[in-house]
Amino acid sequence: MKIAMISEHASPLASIGSADAGGQNVHVAELSAALVGLGHDVHVFTRRDDPSQPNVTETAGGVVVHHLDAGPASPISKDRLLPFMTSFARELSFSLARERFDVAHAHFWMSGFATVAAAVPLRIPVVQTYHALGVEKLRHQGADDTSPRERIGIERQLLRDVDRVVATASSEVFELMRMGAEAAKIRIIPCGVNLDFFDRAPARAPRPRPLRHRIATLSRLVRRKGVGDVIRALRNVPDTELVIGGGTNDASDPDERELREIASECGVRERVTFHGRVDRADVPAFLRDADAVVCASWYEPFGIVPLEAMACRIPVVATAVGGQNDTVLDGFTGFSALPREPRTIATALRSLLESPDLRQRLGAAGRHRVEERFCWDRIARETERVYRSMQIMRTQIDATA
View 1 (tube, rainbow, N blue to C red):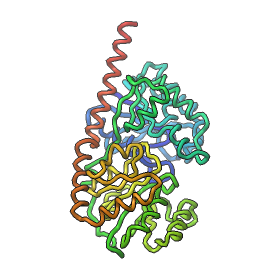
View 2 (tube, rainbow, N blue to C red):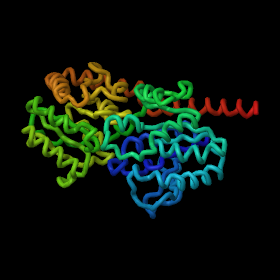
View 3 (cartoon, rainbow, N blue to C red):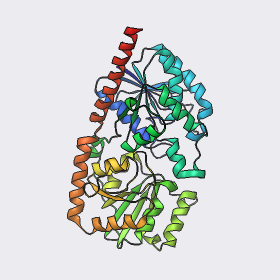
View 4 (cartoon, rainbow, N blue to C red):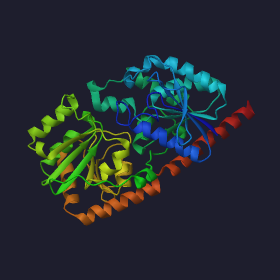
């Protein structure tokens, strides 16, 4: 099949950890490469955010990436991109019309907005993956939500316009149904993890440990990621260092400054290390250097870091929200904690840190779970089945027209 992946702000070529570059970029890159591995011709369409970017480039994995002009060729926050999506849709339409594509798979709501406008008139079936939903973001962030006011309405309209919706977690299905989705349109296919990447990552000398134990977090430092709750939990986890991966390691950054203040107020500042941004190639070593990884988001549509820690055989303490309920099995691959409840995080961490045997057992179970359920080959095959079902549906419709 010839597959169009549309990811307006999340290029598979972006440097992970920069602004608006994270799990969706990894998802699009890995899913596209895995589908190429199954013999498909995959093209990713993304917005040009640098004038030096070529119109078309091919990755080492055989994925063809197209940079489309939509607004200034410079970085723009995704929450400010909607005014340029009409231009993006127009450029996408020209590209899709040049060659026959079998399916268009939109990632994120703005990509869906552009893909429906470009692909439906060309009779190309459309799959939508939201990655995050506006109703959930607004519920949890309230006045701090910077999404365009049109977002929720467009997301609801997409449920009517697209042929299939791929949800990445069971919790997302409940949100979609409350929004008016047709159950027959929804398929659950999780995000994945590249086991080869983690297995082939070079071993590196561990950082010296000033204390007996080390725990780690890896995320953007925005408040909803719950890093402040991990710092607060540290008060009740003795003889333990917390290494925070992510952010800029710039004390003037407001998010980082707030976390430093929390650490000082809690009396644990000397036990908290701000590592700053972790380059993608360094993620395996960063995670393996910890006794446990903590993912304390207040809400999380899916959450890649728990899978990455499990791939490294490191047990996870994760808040019981969103996709983390599907990945981290309480007492089997790690421990669940309540969101915004540092004491439950501390309780889980003490249980882990007090028992090397428990950490080893949970880490091994986590690795097994990733191998069985979250490898990209399996996810690509499940996605392929969705695409093929749409081809059959479209053939049947054409035959009766």
